[in-house]
Length: 275
Image: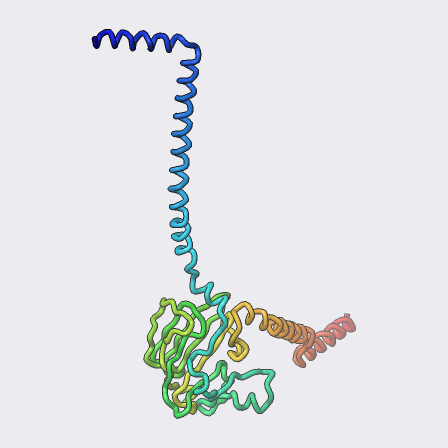
């Protein structure tokens, strides 16, 4: 019985395959299955990439959203080198060549019976107590000098575009050379110095551009780029004045030069007359 069923099934299959439409139908069905598999694989792969993409971008953002201290200092406005502005007083101001005679006199520091123009601002607090000294800008500590005989302890922090801030007359130093500091970090406490002993416990704060002292009052609440832009006209004026002075010195002759030239002319006239 089973053998007859197998024979009947085999005969039916042969009849089916004799039809012309069978092989094209099988081919189309196989092609449809293959194409469906390829599409499914591609969709699965793109889904994995979509999941991975934000993770990679998050890593990239974590790597590149950490700007260097130099960049920070170029975009952040300079702050006072201490907190609690209402408690601070200026003991000695910056010596400004364009200030009035009275202001210039008040900006002189007397040491060893000699007057010195103040190249920074000396800050103190009421009552003469010490206070925390903070970084005015983010940057790198390039100098820490302790026990300076004249200036007291000194900290120098380097910023963008050749700018540095100096903190003199400090004590209890909290940083070392090579440290990266952020704006507002406590770096020391106010102390004393021999140069301005009259100021008592104070902070001597300086701002320098390419080793030239700048009035700190002209720098607060300004970025490094804004400070650079504001001092360019002054630098150009000083450069022009210097060139003008050199030109005048070259054209003017000293009395000794005039006498020498006069004697040379007389000697030449005598030589011509003798000949």
